[in-house]
Length: 414
Ligand SMILES: Cc1cc2nc3c(=O)[nH]c(=O)nc-3n(C[C@H](O)[C@H](O)[C@H](O)COP(=O)(O)OP(=O)(O)OC[C@H]3O[C@@H](n4cnc5c(N)ncnc54)[C@H](O)[C@@H]3O)c2cc1C
Image (cartoon, rainbow, N blue to C red):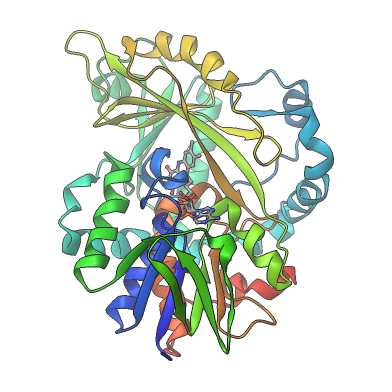
């Protein structure tokens, strides 16, 4: 019983935690109300972002804030009705994004990010899904030489400080790398390290299958039924009540809904995002995922087609879907690539689980013996799932953690 755990939430983060615990000999039940990998981990842009050593800050330039406030952009939109509820976490997000504070945040973030490729590959090889991790990186496209120069300076710092790999392409080299791109750009920054996952859902489910093959157990259940059972924890599942000495909350954007019943209410907020797939006309191909800087959305070649993923939408939790960013992005995307018809009738939506200081929560939930958190991975939860899984499993087992966990402790929001 002492080395037993219920892991709540079977997204990339929860599955990875469950797998790492199981490998260390724990009895583990992974519980989700849906099959594994069907939350945000399903529909993201599929990038294992070794380059993302700087998390997404809150914009601080007045011009940019004014542009977002007009609510007509592609990269960020908001429901006005959501603003009162978001005011406090967004103000804190803005505060943490002040350059001096942000530098410390980015250092803590980079300590996790630099491990992501190795941690994924170690699991994917064993899970038989390494072929989903395509080592092709991704590209940012720029319209002006000034943007290209700024990107080069930024990339050079990332290489110097964090060993991030990149190459710069001029307009001609970009046209050669992406022969079916229909616009001419001044150049591109190609982050060369990231893996591009051809099917993020298949990746998560392959890790879940490995967990089960190694003796782990998946059960359908609602995390809201979590309760104390003596010194341990109990949750109700379709197969009856499950008890364990420890419980891990890995519920992505819904994590706070459960932890607040146990006295811990982190200031989590969601950045919603959408995707839709398209065919390509004729024998056109897209060789790399790309973001065209002027457009603010991502185009990724995937198994299902060209996946267009949108930036951030701020809405009240549970508000109905409003995929206006897809509507704004699609005509622009059609000027970039010879896109054919939509693959699906309606867009998919998921929620990036965000914290005001841009760092995930990985560690003990204060005041509750045996309760742990692994959530708040925002824009890089697919990237950081295996890293978080290993780190938390080491902490729960009393081993020396492979990354210093101090910056991710839950107490900072207590
Ligand atoms: C458009 C978009 C693009 C993105 N692109 C990338 C990218 O390229 N790279 C990257 O690294 N990240 C990306 N992200 C972010 C990434 O998808 C998330 O950070 C990540 O999926 C979070 O994983 P998670 O396991 O914490 O949460 P989730 O995958 O959301 O899993 C949470 C699980 O909890 C379950 N759950 C919730 N409530 C309950 C309950 N009451 N009872 C039982 N189960 C419950 C859900 O069913 C779900 O399975 C993107 C996100 C979006 C939206």
